[in-house]
Image 1 (cartoon, one colour):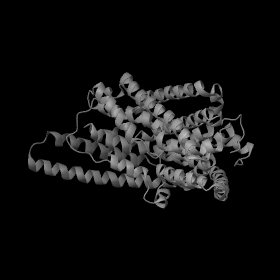
Image 2 (cartoon, rainbow, N blue to C red):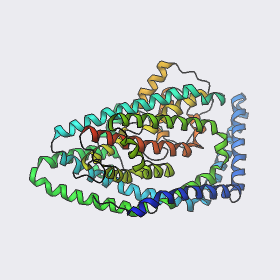
Image 3 (cartoon, rainbow, N blue to C red):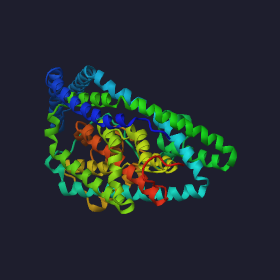
Image 4 (cartoon, rainbow, N blue to C red):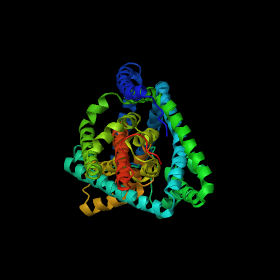
Length: 468
């Protein structure tokens, strides 16, 4: 497949993204301290009022007094929601830049996964080849996932970031705008097997698209000569979509600028100081995870793993800036081809990785879940923590690589282990900052996984897109 950017554009785009990132932070600080100052003051007043009434409710025993306090709580909560909407409206033009870019990327992802995976599987030729590569891929994915979850558990027990919070267990159920990710075998299987491939593509359900694409590719290969027409058609469609990706990527610096401006304008630079310890400890853990992933890659592909990291720096930066590993998917696919991974392996492994190998998100799930338990003074035994790890191992599969998706799974896990879901409120303010790191880590993990499987298959060249 041809390259979608000229060498000059390729060199400049990461620079433009960095410029957009820092410009967004600076403008966000200016807007926070001036344009949104009154809104932020009002929101803080409402939040203090809600917290005060919640505290009074926990001590009040008189029924009539409780009714009055609950009504005040409801009124203040509504005022807080209205003030929040007003503030969001003021920075909406900046949020729109990021939202439009992410919508354009999501527009590309489903057809790109479908066409490239069908071509990749069809060119493998038979079910035994699919099974062989699939087995190697899943073996790496499960090992990396287990390592990520275990590392998160170890690091949060070493750092104990939640101990400093020292929060009382809440008596009231605090509603958060997060859907609970309850796990059951039925729900999991429904999430894997699509009832309609059109619906799966409309909702960007990557795992369901992968299942249909695998079946379609195997059936196409079984047609023999007659299937070559379909393979050629989908291969051409994939090239067209990658060309569109090149056009969309030109908007990335503007999207990054808009996203960072909106986040910092609303949260303010103070959020960095308030949770600096937690953020620092989480990023130290992510750095350690990167080191282990790179070490694992080094054991298989040698020093070329360092060249791989340089090759995929652009999609890593994009995922970090937009807090979405999905946004980096098309660019990651392109850069892995340039690195020397064969097309049919890339188009097979990478889409699966977006369902089964989100290493950064999985480490965050154990780290965040145990942080919340520590914040409420809950001392979970080692067997309980290991059980939580295994539950997260299952519930995290198929999770979308989009902002806040991890919180859905965490909400369900907290309920399973009787940890107050209200604790998620501790993370909502800084989640965008944490999401940036884990999204970038997801890209690193999937890039290394693709290169490793390519090496195992003898399909790793020395740069330049390999023939399929």
